[in-house]
Length: 188
Image 1: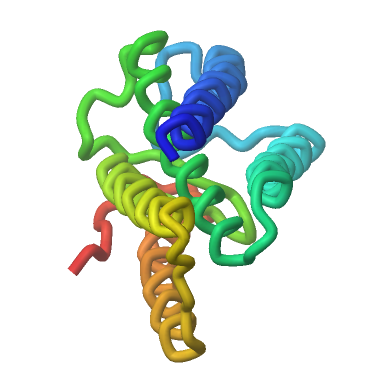
Image 2: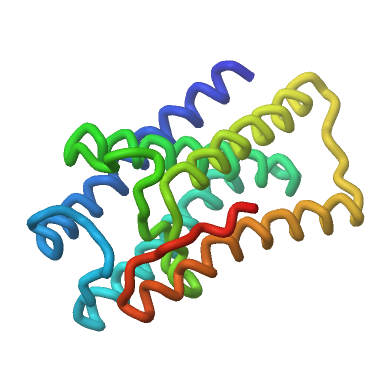
Protein backbone atom coordinates (compact mmCIF):
# COMPACT_ATOMS: atom_id res chain seq x y z
CA UNK A 1 0.00 0.00 0.00
CA UNK A 2 2.78 2.44 0.88
CA UNK A 3 4.43 2.07 -2.54
CA UNK A 4 1.08 2.40 -4.31
CA UNK A 5 0.16 5.50 -2.30
CA UNK A 6 3.63 7.00 -2.77
CA UNK A 7 3.33 6.78 -6.55
CA UNK A 8 -0.15 8.30 -6.43
CA UNK A 9 1.36 11.16 -4.42
CA UNK A 10 4.16 11.60 -6.98
CA UNK A 11 1.60 11.61 -9.80
CA UNK A 12 -0.58 14.18 -8.01
CA UNK A 13 2.38 16.44 -7.18
CA UNK A 14 3.68 16.33 -10.76
CA UNK A 15 0.24 17.04 -12.15
CA UNK A 16 -0.20 19.87 -9.64
CA UNK A 17 2.93 21.44 -11.12
CA UNK A 18 1.61 21.06 -14.67
CA UNK A 19 -1.68 22.68 -13.64
CA UNK A 20 0.13 25.50 -11.87
CA UNK A 21 2.33 26.10 -14.93
CA UNK A 22 -0.72 26.58 -17.16
CA UNK A 23 -2.31 28.97 -14.67
CA UNK A 24 0.97 30.88 -14.25
CA UNK A 25 1.14 31.39 -18.02
CA UNK A 26 -2.48 32.53 -18.16
CA UNK A 27 -2.01 34.92 -15.25
CA UNK A 28 1.13 36.42 -16.75
CA UNK A 29 -0.84 37.12 -19.93
CA UNK A 30 -4.20 38.22 -18.49
CA UNK A 31 -3.17 39.51 -15.04
CA UNK A 32 0.31 41.04 -15.36
CA UNK A 33 -0.26 42.98 -12.11
CA UNK A 34 -1.53 39.93 -10.21
CA UNK A 35 -4.79 37.98 -10.19
CA UNK A 36 -7.86 39.64 -8.72
CA UNK A 37 -11.60 39.91 -9.16
CA UNK A 38 -13.50 40.91 -11.21
CA UNK A 39 -12.00 38.54 -13.73
CA UNK A 40 -10.68 39.57 -17.12
CA UNK A 41 -12.76 38.03 -19.88
CA UNK A 42 -10.71 36.06 -22.38
CA UNK A 43 -11.45 35.46 -26.02
CA UNK A 44 -14.01 32.72 -26.56
CA UNK A 45 -11.47 30.36 -28.11
CA UNK A 46 -9.12 30.70 -25.11
CA UNK A 47 -12.01 30.12 -22.69
CA UNK A 48 -13.09 27.06 -24.67
CA UNK A 49 -9.57 25.62 -24.61
CA UNK A 50 -9.42 26.19 -20.83
CA UNK A 51 -12.74 24.42 -20.29
CA UNK A 52 -11.66 21.48 -22.47
CA UNK A 53 -8.30 21.37 -20.63
CA UNK A 54 -10.13 21.13 -17.30
CA UNK A 55 -12.25 18.28 -18.62
CA UNK A 56 -9.11 16.55 -19.94
CA UNK A 57 -7.58 16.85 -16.46
CA UNK A 58 -10.49 14.90 -14.99
CA UNK A 59 -10.22 12.31 -17.79
CA UNK A 60 -6.52 11.82 -17.05
CA UNK A 61 -7.19 11.30 -13.35
CA UNK A 62 -9.98 8.83 -14.04
CA UNK A 63 -7.84 7.02 -16.64
CA UNK A 64 -5.11 6.50 -14.04
CA UNK A 65 -7.67 5.13 -11.60
CA UNK A 66 -9.09 2.80 -14.26
CA UNK A 67 -5.64 1.49 -15.16
CA UNK A 68 -4.83 0.70 -11.54
CA UNK A 69 -8.03 -0.91 -10.27
CA UNK A 70 -11.00 -2.96 -11.45
CA UNK A 71 -13.53 -2.24 -8.71
CA UNK A 72 -15.41 1.04 -8.92
CA UNK A 73 -14.89 1.94 -5.27
CA UNK A 74 -11.10 1.54 -5.64
CA UNK A 75 -11.09 3.59 -8.83
CA UNK A 76 -12.94 6.33 -6.98
CA UNK A 77 -10.41 6.08 -4.14
CA UNK A 78 -7.49 6.58 -6.54
CA UNK A 79 -9.30 9.49 -8.18
CA UNK A 80 -9.91 11.06 -4.76
CA UNK A 81 -6.26 10.75 -3.77
CA UNK A 82 -4.77 12.14 -6.98
CA UNK A 83 -7.39 14.91 -7.16
CA UNK A 84 -6.67 15.96 -3.59
CA UNK A 85 -2.89 15.87 -3.97
CA UNK A 86 -3.08 17.65 -7.33
CA UNK A 87 -5.23 20.44 -5.91
CA UNK A 88 -3.12 21.04 -2.81
CA UNK A 89 0.16 21.04 -4.72
CA UNK A 90 -1.33 23.30 -7.38
CA UNK A 91 -1.73 25.94 -4.67
CA UNK A 92 1.71 25.23 -3.20
CA UNK A 93 3.34 25.71 -6.61
CA UNK A 94 1.39 28.94 -7.20
CA UNK A 95 2.62 30.16 -3.82
CA UNK A 96 6.19 29.17 -4.70
CA UNK A 97 6.26 30.79 -8.15
CA UNK A 98 3.80 33.71 -7.82
CA UNK A 99 3.64 34.20 -4.05
CA UNK A 100 -0.10 33.67 -4.46
CA UNK A 101 -2.48 33.17 -2.71
CA UNK A 102 -1.82 35.81 -0.07
CA UNK A 103 -3.77 33.73 2.47
CA UNK A 104 -6.18 30.82 2.69
CA UNK A 105 -8.98 33.41 2.59
CA UNK A 106 -7.93 34.65 -0.88
CA UNK A 107 -10.65 34.15 -3.48
CA UNK A 108 -10.00 32.02 -6.55
CA UNK A 109 -11.72 30.63 -9.59
CA UNK A 110 -11.65 26.94 -8.79
CA UNK A 111 -13.20 25.33 -11.84
CA UNK A 112 -15.27 26.23 -14.89
CA UNK A 113 -17.38 23.12 -15.49
CA UNK A 114 -20.32 23.42 -15.95
CA UNK A 115 -20.40 26.92 -14.45
CA UNK A 116 -17.69 28.92 -12.64
CA UNK A 117 -16.78 27.53 -9.22
CA UNK A 118 -15.52 30.31 -6.95
CA UNK A 119 -14.40 30.37 -3.36
CA UNK A 120 -11.63 31.17 -0.96
CA UNK A 121 -8.62 28.86 -1.16
CA UNK A 122 -9.30 27.13 2.17
CA UNK A 123 -12.46 25.15 1.23
CA UNK A 124 -10.90 23.23 -1.68
CA UNK A 125 -7.82 22.55 0.44
CA UNK A 126 -9.98 21.16 3.25
CA UNK A 127 -12.01 19.11 0.76
CA UNK A 128 -8.77 17.83 -0.79
CA UNK A 129 -7.42 16.72 2.58
CA UNK A 130 -10.68 14.84 3.15
CA UNK A 131 -10.49 13.23 -0.29
CA UNK A 132 -6.92 12.07 0.33
CA UNK A 133 -7.82 10.63 3.73
CA UNK A 134 -10.95 8.87 2.47
CA UNK A 135 -9.22 7.53 -0.64
CA UNK A 136 -6.28 6.27 1.40
CA UNK A 137 -8.62 4.59 3.89
CA UNK A 138 -10.49 2.78 1.11
CA UNK A 139 -7.31 1.56 -0.59
CA UNK A 140 -5.73 0.59 2.71
CA UNK A 141 -8.68 -1.72 3.39
CA UNK A 142 -8.40 -3.10 -0.16
CA UNK A 143 -4.72 -3.93 0.26
CA UNK A 144 -5.49 -5.62 3.58
CA UNK A 145 -7.96 -7.85 1.71
CA UNK A 146 -11.05 -6.14 3.12
CA UNK A 147 -12.71 -4.36 0.24
CA UNK A 148 -15.13 -1.59 1.12
CA UNK A 149 -18.74 -2.11 0.07
CA UNK A 150 -20.76 1.04 -0.38
CA UNK A 151 -24.50 0.46 -0.21
CA UNK A 152 -27.02 2.49 -2.25
CA UNK A 153 -28.06 4.65 0.72
CA UNK A 154 -24.36 5.40 1.37
CA UNK A 155 -23.85 6.37 -2.28
CA UNK A 156 -26.83 8.70 -1.95
CA UNK A 157 -25.35 10.33 1.16
CA UNK A 158 -21.96 10.71 -0.53
CA UNK A 159 -23.47 12.21 -3.67
CA UNK A 160 -25.65 14.63 -1.69
CA UNK A 161 -22.64 15.71 0.38
CA UNK A 162 -20.63 16.29 -2.79
CA UNK A 163 -23.52 18.24 -4.28
CA UNK A 164 -23.70 20.53 -1.23
CA UNK A 165 -19.97 21.24 -1.53
CA UNK A 166 -20.23 21.91 -5.27
CA UNK A 167 -23.22 24.23 -4.78
CA UNK A 168 -21.22 26.16 -2.18
CA UNK A 169 -18.72 26.93 -4.96
CA UNK A 170 -21.33 27.62 -7.64
CA UNK A 171 -23.25 30.22 -5.59
CA UNK A 172 -20.36 32.72 -5.48
CA UNK A 173 -19.53 31.72 -9.08
CA UNK A 174 -22.28 34.10 -10.15
CA UNK A 175 -19.84 36.92 -9.37
CA UNK A 176 -17.69 35.79 -12.31
CA UNK A 177 -20.65 35.99 -14.66
CA UNK A 178 -21.73 39.35 -13.22
CA UNK A 179 -18.17 40.73 -13.40
CA UNK A 180 -18.17 41.56 -9.68
CA UNK A 181 -16.01 40.72 -6.70
CA UNK A 182 -17.26 37.75 -4.64
CA UNK A 183 -18.41 38.84 -1.20
CA UNK A 184 -19.51 35.74 0.66
CA UNK A 185 -18.69 32.05 0.71
CA UNK A 186 -21.71 30.02 1.94
CA UNK A 187 -19.88 27.65 4.24
CA UNK A 188 -22.49 27.57 6.99
